[in-house]
Image (cartoon, rainbow over all chains, first blue to last red; front, top):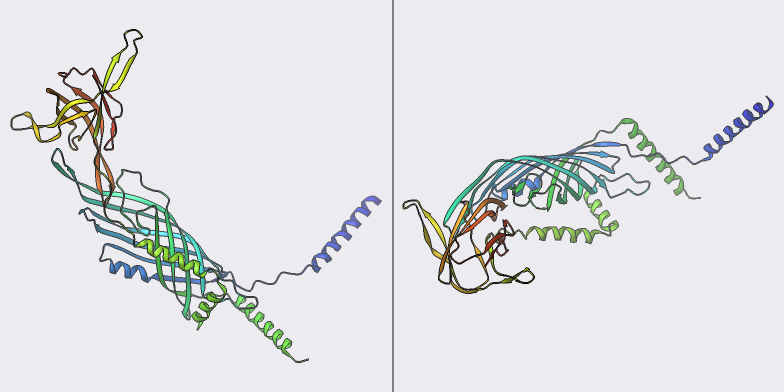
Length: 255
Length: 183
């Protein structure tokens, strides 16, 4: 019985000592940037221009929505519609159109200096996973038998394809005026499911570009950011700013 | 002002800026190198090689050596639907070619039998190749090519041919050995 009493007493003493030690550990500084900083809706201008310049040979229209998480992580969903109507030098015609989707995340490579409010401008690096399922047709494929002297025209209509690719993205976003953002990005694309040699394959993939193992893209976007800041977090930032201000004024006082 | 401050921040703090600019330049230059000309060879031909076989009388072993035909003339035979007969093509594939040990023949792209008149020195024979034609799509620039799979090879025997053997059924290139003709 005595032994049990000694054991319990020592346990209680231990608990109190651990508790008091834990109080001595320095608390981490409160994270002042809220988790959710708003959502940006943006449209691509460069693709509209290039679609107009190409004279209908290829076209892509694309919009995206991006969430600002802690001003560091930016999950993004890009949706668009693209296609092609291309006639090659040897008069073979390719036609397709379809929707494409890309999902991914950007990371802001700029980190704000200590005691500084983070800038709303961004330098982003990110990845995307893209997918497009679309119908296509290839017509007027002329095959000539030079020796035996016959010619046939082959048409491949009602073909379908589903393509998946990944992208590496690098770009900037600048707040040109309150909540209006502009920016550009370059991206390299790599096709995951490639075509089997000898099988009919699409010339153009919506959202990816020409059907090659690797491709690249350029985007120039214009967007609007919907700021949805919780009041609690706003208060925290204000309190932090006032503390900094007080500290600065105290430090600046002459002795 | 915000954007100016941002670019200043980039200029002052980002030492990798030249690397990024180089990366973008390379991408832009790469985009200019789109080649829309077809540079792929779409011609396929059946390759046949002539061999002379000798049998060692004592050991019974068969010895194979390359055989060069002194003079060979080959022309395609086309079926004439009016006369219901095969007529010789005006275009001759080999015309009295000397010392030929291998020949390359174009197969029909749209029919399953290709027939040739082969003149070995002054001896006339008929070579018939039965085959399947397969469309292979290449690209928008190149279109399609037709490759073949050999099923059967038949030959009349005025030149005293010993045997014919198919060693590669797939006719996908211009200069592969597909059949061996033994004399």
